[in-house]
Amino acid sequence: MIIMSDDIIDIQQIPEHLKYHISSGEINILKSLKEYEKEQILKVLAAVDNNKTHAAKILQIDRKTLNHKII
Image (cartoon, rainbow, N blue to C red; front, side, top):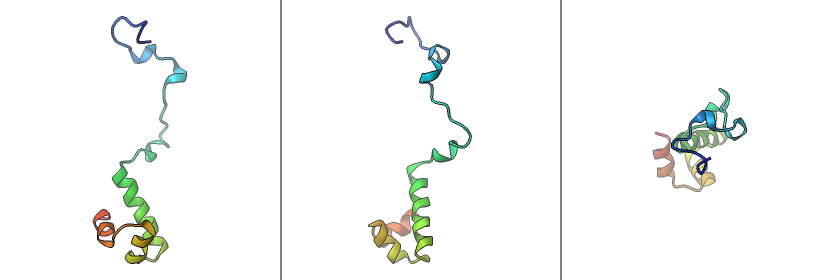
């Protein structure tokens, strides 16, 4: 496409099979790393009855780091 293009490649020039379509259900998976990390930490905390020391050990991070990441 780049070689055969004169100037700018427009979205209409890209074949459908090369386009990535995002359905409304997939938008939820597009999170920042910070959001995903916090979500995972909260899941681990829930699994260990909010025992931060145990959660930090499972996550292999310091308890202070865990506290900082869930703020």
